[in-house]
Image 1: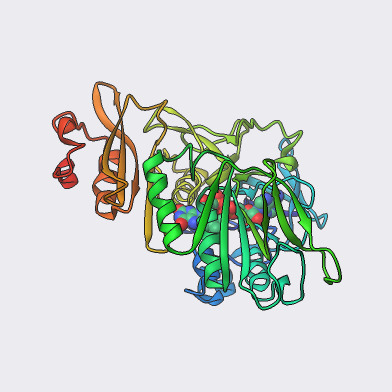
Image 2: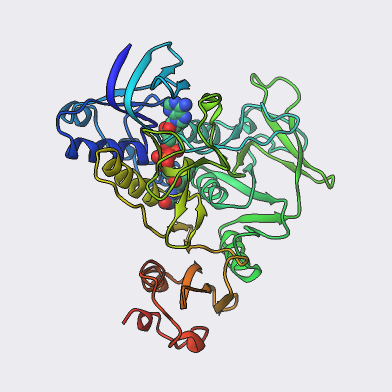
Length: 436
Ligand SMILES: Cc1cc2nc3c(=O)[nH]c(=O)nc-3n(C[C@H](O)[C@H](O)[C@H](O)COP(=O)(O)OP(=O)(O)OC[C@H]3O[C@@H](n4cnc5c(N)ncnc54)[C@H](O)[C@@H]3O)c2cc1C
């Protein structure tokens, strides 16, 4: 059995940042990271740019082998952790290797939710979370089945290839751009909700995104839920989807399928450990779990959010690194409160979107709107009075990047906006006045 002072499960944003900070604070400690991926740390955030060929595979890697050696951090790759004995501070990986730890950080992120319908095991169905997912997606687009062909509704030989994307969230935007960049001529996104990204966006914001997609040759079909994937009949060497059928009876021919319907963490290895799990691993504001010497950070942590006084899970890279850094300090003996408001921005084709803080209508007292579909930009500002202060608790911003920075500051600095409140919805109001 190996013994290590600090054991970290998961070697991505939260896990690797934590290792780096722990090394800085405790130069003589032993640190081990175990990951089930076969790689040093790489950027998941850059995967969409990798599948559109804007960055090379090499660029994705954030840490080289030498970095782990120089920092005396042992990286155990390709070894899924399968069990935890919290009482004896022991953990085992799938190779049967056992580790005894002083302190344990769980930073296991999440995996894409699988669409469970008949035909879901066919080869050309893709998810996007790992580098291997990205490689496989590019490969399918390049050598899609239409070359060989085919199903009556798929692409006949020589015709433009077809892609179908299931789900209306951010990964679907990445898939849409990825398909276009890899020569898929006709791309259709199927969403079961009444409009794209319903639940996160209002109808007008969604329409702006839809219109940007359409400008780039991507069709959005709302209110359609997949019933099954039908394989191509005939002589194709591998079993691949040729048609997506929806519950309403519509059919969509395809050569490649992308699915983006959410993520979920796998906590099966924590069964019997006694750790408290709700929607994710429950922690306090110091990212300490319900068990002594065991901590959680990043996408897999449901932490007590002191900014908004609630339990919360964040799913973005900046949060994962901030939590990794904060928990590393606490694990090293410098107890550190985690305090940060979520902020997530991305682009798709020529469009830009940002989500800041809490964008939940049920949580806010009021939502102020700026911009319109016709103007091609829309911002929604979520306002709530907390502790006597009228605060901006969150915002969704579509195609208006100048508003991101002042609104982020207003959320993070808990600014009282009551003096500006009445003008917030006016197009002439300069957001920078909020923080002047
Ligand atoms: C395609 C895509 C695009 C994204 N774009 C953005 C963006 O633009 N901006 C942004 O802020 N965020 C973005 N995100 C989200 C961001 O990547 C995540 O929030 C971030 O990676 C979370 O970091 P983490 O360390 O918590 O977990 P993860 O990055 O998920 O890493 C967890 C690691 O733990 C490993 N692991 C899990 N279980 C075990 C086990 N039992 N044993 C060993 N290892 C295990 C996993 O394989 C993984 O390597 C994107 C994500 C994806 C997939």
